[in-house]
Image (cartoon, rainbow, N blue to C red; front, side):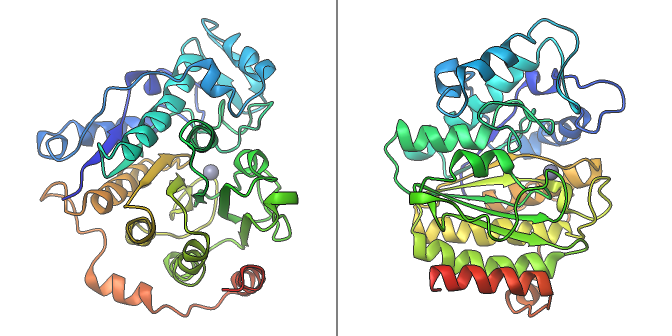
Length: 354
Ligand SMILES: [Zn+2]
């Protein structure tokens, strides 16, 4: 079995966004409750970690932006954009969320752990260098990738963003950079509006942003096909030294913000293929960090499916088998057709000559 680090912290539950806000602490509470069961806790590793310093946050964000978020501390309620609300502890929570990703990357590089899942709030992938947006204060995955490049000297990091929404913040952070290959599948056109197929990077970063805009209603087979036919050859061509995932469970069925139809088996399969790529290409170094997902059943089942794959065995005998052998055989050979998917894959394969 693999040593899977799980990052959780009480402050991630203390970031309050106001009554009836979708991005609520309950999203994590339902997973944390599972993780407290002895049978599960004993199979996972829960590192003690520090919050990120403002110097680390500034690897990805402007000093003005850090000041703006810091100024919300101790205030019961502030708005950083129309739907990004903070509470007294939100700034601290955001520092710990970025700190979790940095700590996980450090431990992967030191081979102290095999892989990691950061179950954090607030999420990050919409946060741009100079502004918070879309429930995100600081861009956790982008801070982590910057840390790996600028502090640890890595030269090729692959970010797979399977959240329902396009990670505009992450894309912008690395748009002119070939040291980070940013790959996003997302419902399109949709919030935040970016992520069209031709957005593929500029300058040295040309080709290192890969957007797969999808029509709604895509499910396990569409996602399986993207991983099989695109991400596997793309990763082999790029040869990442570390793989990071922006994981959103808002691609699952019955989500309030989207219309994708992915099941826990589909989430498990995407995790499995990504982990196999990491094992083949970069000593298994894979860190997954939470972005969206608003249906509590999806948060719980999706997280357990991810953790089961990362760990390599069921976490508890009362959990279902999330991915059966039959599922794997079906997903590996899927030929599901989709016009938007075909167009995107053709474009990317041509560019990368894969
Ligand atoms: Zn999302």
